[in-house]
Image (cartoon, rainbow, N blue to C red; front, side, top):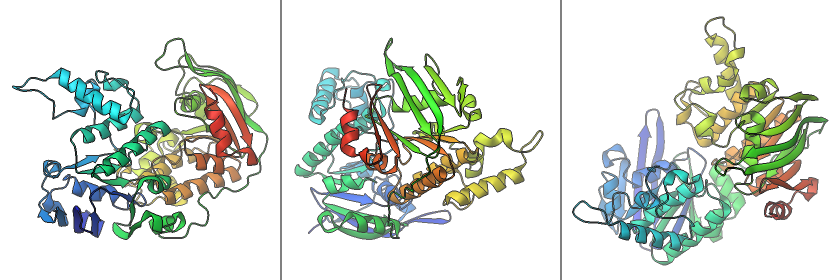
Length: 503
């Protein structure tokens, strides 16, 4: 079959690294081609070549559109060929309206003026088509991360692309928003639009894609019809090794109660007089993983934030750690009580992106490093190297900037930062968000090893198989209230979901 788009023998080099090595792919008209692989496999780099982010002299290889060789010199060149890219990192004008963000650069009007009536009408048409319940005139600053991601997608759709590239588009979306996106992707495909769909979520590949292309270490490993490949072989091709158990959870020795949270209430961040968490009580035992399930907005992340002292304004609770009542007024109080916190938004609050692996790993432990006036760098390097080796962080050295690491290795650095503090209780919010299946298995293995040494973990997760497979006990929040508690074989997707939609 003739291809609408071909990328032939593409090689892209960075100092000391070959990010793409002789990569060739073809995309047919009106198909969804999923591209998967571990973080660092070269997926996003390949799409940046296609989108014109790298000029043609910055890489080797050719790009052909409609059977003709094209010289991609800029983003404008790619757009001229009908190629639109939706990146993971959203770029929005926060104080402009939804309509202005969707049509930025293509505002309707003439003689330098904007036809706002047409702008809002065209925006409403797209919003209705997608099924997103927001207003064209609403300020973008008030939208959540999922709505911002949908806005990026609508911006691309508004330009009527022939080829649409989606880089991890569902990582910030709710289940409802994912359904809206999948439905619209099908409509785009049926109308003749071709889609390149990068995702870590295997269930999405089997749900929506026609073919799946696997990349590893900057090379194409395979490209097959989705119906011809099973999930086990797909994972093994991605990671380059057999994974006998994706969820390596060992049965831990569950001990006595180490944490008790009573009557926790957290004010809603935007609605005055309303609580996002309401009179919530639970306990945690030594060596167990306590999962917290629920839908977006149920109050799960706010619960962890209150326990760790990140959220304090208006919070009410009685917290007992290791038999002693503790007042948590700031994160320092939680750290002194033996509590660590791996946040969901690692890029926002998990690490300092301009610093190295060494500097980020030792960040929480600086007060405990030797040195009267200056940090003993020799000790710091030894501790950071030891933790990096323990967590199998892939990088040229511990002096590598964390921003240059894959998502899975960034998550390991954030985890290592807290492990160096040797917490007895670890709060983890979305432990594997945005990372590949190989790194997921390694994170799960680390969690299991920690509980084996007596560390207790509270895990918030929107990944249902992860929640079910890794939790010793699971409690569920709905509307800020406890609606379910399950243990052992009673932790099933059906039970958790029923409790999650109880209110």
